Image (cartoon, rainbow, N blue to C red; front, side, top):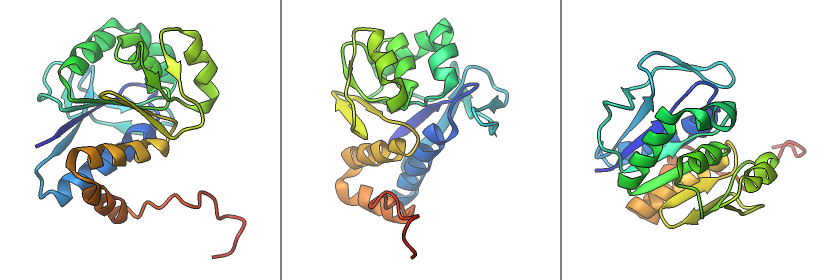
Length: 200
């Protein structure tokens, strides 16, 4: 059984966690419910995300089950607010030590840097924030790649790249054929990446 814990907070970028949440839940469904994915937040009430979507967490930082995978999304909250919240950064640091995998999307890497797991590692983040992250020091930003794997840390560029890295992760956990089945189920086929200039 794999338990995925997706951290949510004010001003989190919606698809940074909803995309992977879909991948993890479809993976669980195809494994006959052997796995579970839960949303975790500092407080029990609704969380308003970057573009206004409100979500209700399943657990708080103090009452969640043991997590095999810790997921950290990006967004303004990940860059500007939560890195200065010791309750959240301490929790990320402690939880990352116990989790088998840590998964960051977009500027969630900033929060993982502030909390510790990204320090001294090779990482990816949103293209517009690569210089800013690199300037923080003690991190190697890999550019022009959808996602980067360094040990048990998986980080990706923004938004849809989080789906790519989540699919890689479920493939690593449960096999490539399983990941391909998840991809087919969600009808995710990003190549070629842009067809709007051609009639279908």
